[in-house]
Length: 166
Ligand code: SME
Image 1 (cartoon, rainbow, N blue to C red):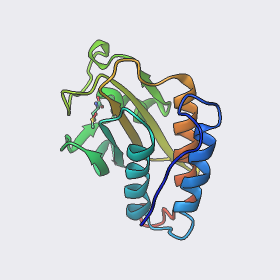
Image 2 (tube, rainbow, N blue to C red):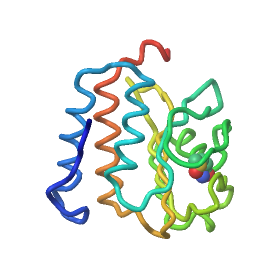
Image 3 (tube, rainbow, N blue to C red):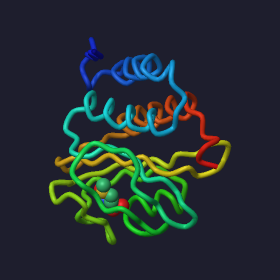
Image 4 (cartoon, rainbow, N blue to C red):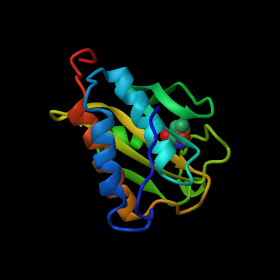
């Protein structure tokens, strides 16, 4: 059984450092892409409060295709440039959206979602996909959350063998 608890509060500067170290341990003995993608999704859902969706879309030519996730059933394919995920894939920049209802083109997979962070996953400069997190709270994600979540995605990138994807 895996049991994760953090000794610091989510608002503290150390919180994401703790999560980085726990995730590094969790992924340390496994290199498989699907396995680690599923573990990252579940770990973030478990350890980051107030989320309703956490998971991957993988890049397939000019489209994103749904990968491992935790949350309600989601849309399966998103063209680059569409919605928050498509924008992250097109710009290769993290999208942190305070209020998804004010984002033109937002794709509402789960009506509960109110704010969202989408992090492009880059391996040796190539786009593998995006990692998407939704919250039912408006303005859930601060800049500190964004940096912490990017650090967690980076742990996943370093721990994983992407040969199968290429
Ligand atoms: N809201 C996303 C779609 C994916 S779901 O949130 C899981 C978007 O606008 O790209």
